[in-house]
Length: 335
Ligand SMILES: NC(=O)c1ccc[n+]([C@@H]2O[C@H](COP(=O)([O-])OP(=O)(O)OC[C@H]3O[C@@H](n4cnc5c(N)ncnc54)[C@H](O)[C@@H]3O)[C@@H](O)[C@H]2O)c1
Picture 1 (cartoon, rainbow, N blue to C red):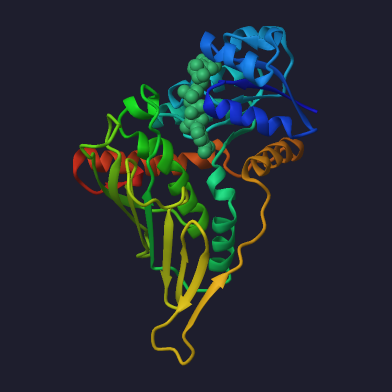
Picture 2 (picture 1 turned 120 degrees about the vertical axis):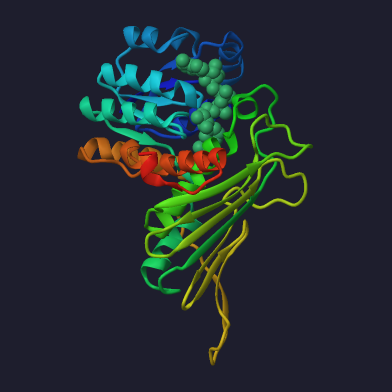
């Protein structure tokens, strides 16, 4: 039985609480939440036992024995939780983004490695059936070597007044697009070498920081990936994965929120446009917990280890730097 300290009982913390409760190999031995309003909500509406609820991780670590911390605090707090957990010899399963600062992220990853603790980031999007299926099809050569990948994202994202999503700059890229950039790495199986980005905001939007962008990633072999987003979209919506199109010499793979398609239409005797049956995959958050526990048991790096996740985070910070400085930025400048 893996003993968990759940840190952060905001919206996503309560989601994780329900996910952990579905399992029989994990129990929550302590909860950490400094906000009295959120403590009260957790006790009254979510059955969190008062005697197991602490205002700080230090208090919890004094009172309980645990195996890992599930960190669902805001990004600026992640390193505080992780460093305390590592110092106590605990593994850390931590919500994305690893941090709101790249240098801090790097330092905390080194701390985890130094203490020999597992440190995994919950990039749940890549565990979905469309990315899993696409990665496999690309590896099998379905469309040949991809030359272009285009993603579009139109969602009324994070509209809770006063939350860090709304008040802090570049939150759409830092907090949300880290999922898409991580999926790009997973699906395409390759790393970009530079990025050019522009960002802007719309007068009707609710974010203080820029919530719309056009970003181009350049890969060493000529592959180009584009990402266009509006996080204050009030019209039609894509799914949360965004709409994807990957183009290769033998056709394209397309997804929207409903289906995946393979097409090869140009100058072929038999034009093809067919629905792709996606792989059946377990629910993403359960798959993440399975992977984390297996990595602990087998004493190996988990998929989405924090060390690997630095590469997804570097894409975030390189895109932000490019937007701020109005120039193409090499990924090497970040990491
Ligand atoms: N993977 C996903 O799809 C997904 C979805 C939503 C949120 N998230 C991530 O989950 C994290 C939390 O997001 P949220 O929407 O729940 O934010 P939130 O602001 O609603 O909740 C964060 C909670 O952490 C608490 N907190 C602050 N400092 C703390 C500390 N030192 N110790 C313990 N708790 C502390 C806050 O009081 C708050 O209750 C973020 O990193 C966010 O990006 C991920």
